[in-house]
Length: 80
Image (cartoon, rainbow, N blue to C red; front, side, top):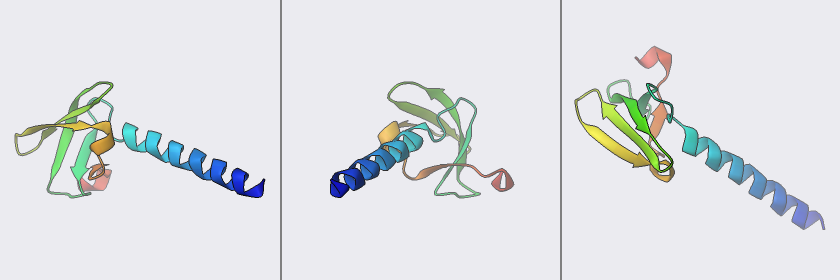
């Protein structure tokens, strides 16, 4: 029984982490950075159920599915 409790707690923690990852940088106007870089930043311009569109400071636009945002971080205020 203890093993099942451990497995269920681990599954719950994984689910919470996944929800957090999907929400990272998903609000409109949120500043984001590629790999926490001060030189490679952008702004979330669109967001829907499947992902977000980021307008990078270099002028390029890119769409990321929520499950594929591992390298995109919310920009720290002191990086901007």
